[in-house]
Picture 1 (cartoon, rainbow, N blue to C red):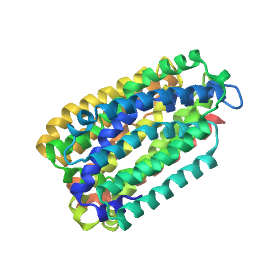
Picture 2 (picture 1 turned 90 degrees about the horizontal axis):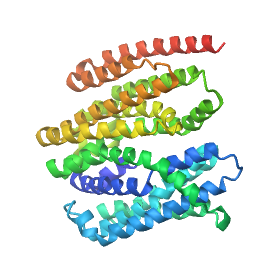
Picture 3 (picture 1 turned 90 degrees about the vertical axis):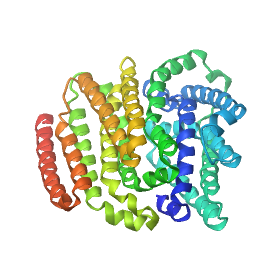
Picture 4 (picture 1 turned 45 degrees about the horizontal axis):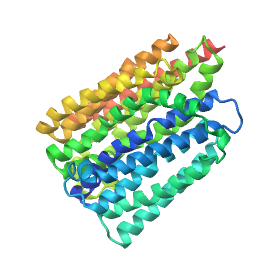
Length: 438
């Protein structure tokens, strides 16, 4: 939401610098989060107690231990972890980053807790409050104080601190009898299976931002992240759907151990919806970006269709993954898929970014996310013993994005044909689902 505001006050070089810092501190956040947000989701589904106090207390204690130790290590070895890896970042920017690293993980956990306990209004109010404060601090630091990149980081750090403290206050249960070493051990074992997935996930966008700044230039990082607002639109819609989808899928798997056809149809329909949304955004991307961005970013608009393609493929993979999360013995496959994608992105990305900069970075991301999505879908399909049959969806969004990038004069006709096909496909799928459910 704030990208247009940031791009007005920050040059591509400055916007690239803060995004490179974010790319670096995001890997630290993922490590210190230790996938405890997914652990609390799984624990809540298994915990029959009304208050869920045991799992809350033990997750909070694990989080506090990890964050305290991790933040101390980062502070002691600050010069190595930050200064040697970044160019142009002063100590003030780094200290802001450390605050964000220390306070973000618990907010991830609290968000997941609210979703899994069925408190959508509380979740919505929390997120709206987060957004409004982010807007307030951004205006204050960037517009009134004119602090540039430091203002960007201060805005993030201020909001992260407030909601980190708020999350601790809401989750912590200060009663000794709720502390259980066996409970913590169980959470750690489950988390360990997902940690490689979280860390490898950084090998996607995080590595791309960081390496693009190192092998290319910081202005390229700024342009990529500014134009990727079109991809963020996909992420916003998919996240809203996924927030509701995870508890629903867990409930379906818990109550019905034989017929999972309803999961197949709903997931396939939602993936179709993501492709339709992506095509609509590609159709109007140039108009939207020229309104949203400052003109110094306009020369990057041509990359928008490929960034939409990347976000749609990523969203499709996320729609199938919660089936895997539910089964302890299958969780390792999520990490395997992400590690595979991260290796593809790092190997291809290094060569492509070095030779082709922005377009190379995007191609590396698309190929890596496509590999991850196909692996996740195949494993999820195997678990429910039903095929999602989504290869035509991959082909359509890929064709539309490539045509729109290479031959924009054919964009309208290609997109319209694709939308007609998808509309018919969805209607037939709904009709088949209704017939089988009857």
